[in-house]
Length: 545
Image 1 (cartoon, rainbow, N blue to C red):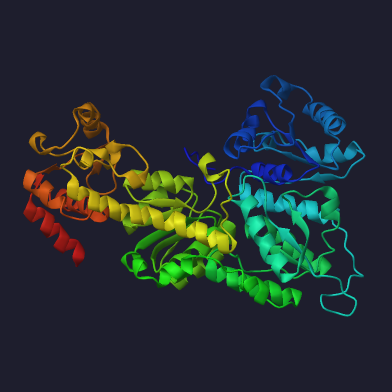
Image 2: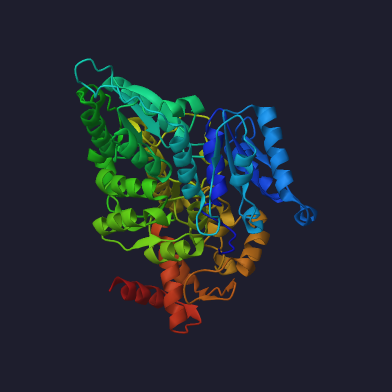
């Protein structure tokens, strides 16, 4: 375990909470110390849920460790069943409680409660959140599911309308709520009935009839893949492999579903109203063709984003990675297809180094990459959890289906378009409204980090008087940069001559930051005290080789 300021995934019991919170009548009894109740905030504050998760914590304290914590656990179990009247009870330990080696599963089963008890063995020090959600959902399905072995296969004599289960949506999932709506539209057009959507919105009774479906649609493999494979083996239910993120993948998904259900795909294919294909064929798209994009997130969303970026927007994938190691093989295969080295890590500092080295013009990532791109002055769009409150919009904003393709188009292209617009604004930098000190509007952050005037001589600055104290402090306390110019935690600002700064401003806005970093690195390697016009062009020639 590594101590980190940021983390891509929480411990596995948070994954179990995501499954329990998504369901309607399942309760989670979590053996945990008082401080572990922080996890509630992920749902009430970040996801903006109207009620707290269905979790009862034993909340033992330090003084309880010298007593019998088993009695504390059993009392909490009795109280939870009496108060919440769940149809099934999940029991497990948090990462901290795991250290005291109590046996929540054994204690709960010994109590002979009047409802199914589903024990969760979630090794907190070797597994993480997505695995915890997957294991929890699998154990729920394995415990509660009962099938209808007499149901005929689709399109056989006497067979009813085809049925499908939607597997994988959970609480705290990235746009899961909206993705369900889009997949439901496609299935309705194909004449396919949704049997159960789980875990989100499902009850214990719904899980019991999950075997009534003809096949399963795996929306998020990180959560549903294990359960889907078990259902395929024990209930003879095939499942989909295509993730419908992007216009092309949605078409492939429709054909795959239609094949499993033995229906005509045409009605759903005719729903295609995505604007992305039209734009990709238009003249307006050509000025973004070949833009370098770095992609990082969970494996499902990262792989799908790479396909969309290359095949539908004409971008060049210069980096591809994921943080969930269970899907490392899939990421390696996708990276080989795009001709890049796979990045499989849960260390955000390693991701930051890779982004800085790749010099992308757009970053597609998580909330973490949003912060990284902000520091590096690179446009960014969020495509994957972990996310912040702003990525749980009140409006309908899916990632899947044809409408999801439109959302991707907007959220990915607009930062780049605004970057080009910003370049035009720099032509009017002497205007009081558009001076350099105003910062880049498309990066959605303050003026200090992106203001290239920090190291300008006083006579060449075009800065409002109110900004002078802010910029002065920034010159002293700017965060460390990548490259030879960085020493310790303080960036040594190499002095640029006035003529070199003027020449630098002639470089388009959206690559000016890269030119500045390369030039300063070049000067630092050669021990140059100042950067002149000659240094700028020598550096350009050096990096162009």
